[in-house]
Length: 191
Figure 1: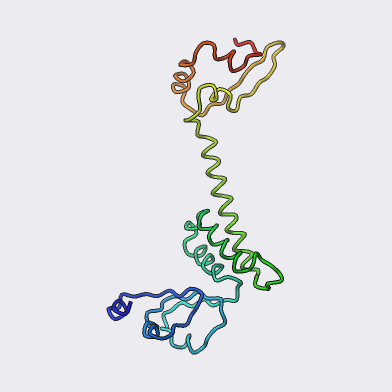
Figure 2: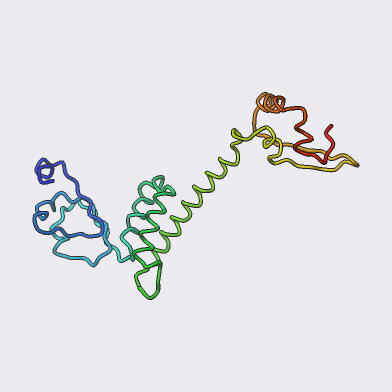
């Protein structure tokens, strides 16, 4: 790191602390970003380059600040996996929002709620895609999916809603054995 620093190729982001110690003190000029939830150390902040962006906020978990940064700068990065990782860390740091631990802030709660919304949305979208995918269904399953039945005097009428081209459905259904309708619907007359 020292070589990169001397060549001007080092940018340091400090997360969950804002003070360097020992041999790392010489790297202070390379600090460009700080996200921390600990009490400020004024002498450490005084040594930072003026271009460094500093966010120090009293929250229960520094991960809350990381999540806020993601939401502010690159919200599309908040996938269900990332949301779950962030949420899990926040819950651990705040002892699952325990009042006895006294670590939780409204900002922690708000960020966890946003993570849960991101997880729900991704789950919902994957379920919508799965529901529409009939590529692995057998012809019999394809005919039963979303089937509606209505009675017309003494006849049962079946209505099928299939989201595929007519040619594809026709090919799949016509490849069925002729006994399929009574095998699939044994108590109904097929017309």
